[in-house]
Length: 404
Image (cartoon, rainbow, N blue to C red):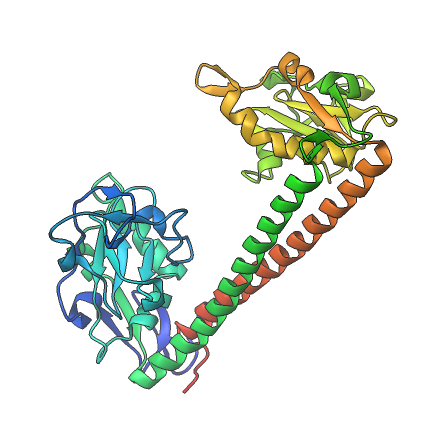
């Protein structure tokens, strides 16, 4: 491809002619440093907060499920300072990074993290933090981490990372600030979605609770799932029965987001072996949970049930939310066949549930469905903002668009 005037081809791709390529180690105020080798403990008293690989989100935020502490006499030597970044050095998450934010409080970094301290006169930490989210960086991580056959990058190897640099610190800062503003919007929306999910969880606990003041609510009854709905088994297939066209066959990965590729079948099956948009499905092996099918007419595979509700007994969407609430309990109490967790049809049908009259079920399901719709709309907006941010990174960190 012919280069545009004013641009050059480099090891990190096409960049403006007045940009430089420098290895990271030439722009640090100290050598990369490994974290403290100490176990996490319960956070109490004046113990410092510990940051580990699992406490860093995929987008580079400090986002622990629960804060933990570290109790070690050498902890004072491992506090992060303003401008420091930490990188994961081993395992499946190698390459993930976090730019220390003082608003996260004082943090001690763990042994599977490497601290990188840029010299701010040469490299803005926030510029580096944005570069290590690009596809150029992640391609480098994939190549570098597998050289030894084991996923991992040490401090010296991180120092070899080539960074494309604008000619002035002012331009570095302008790029970093523009991308940081986009990050702030994404983080704000992420927090809003988390809050909405918490509100919905609280609403479910209230609306699906059959008791009030220790007594069963008026009109609520107890019946087994097998009395109010039919659980219809999916069908297993041999390799010879798969086709390249015909009726799509829904497998677990098609319902969990792990894959969108369908297999097909031309077999003529009883009508109950097919599902249409709006049908309630339940994954009962390896992965648990209810799904409302939104696709075209399809066959559902073994490990999936189609659930047909008795309309005078239970509202389909109400049952969906009941099953959604049951999912975690089923995971904990399910059978273990070999290495694959599953729940049997007999066990599922025997589970007793409380439910109000059908009219009230429908009202409850409508409230919760509206909450789901609001969360889905926010998630769509978040995905859009993330795509926009990726486009900004591609343009700004390669000099395709100049801010100065």
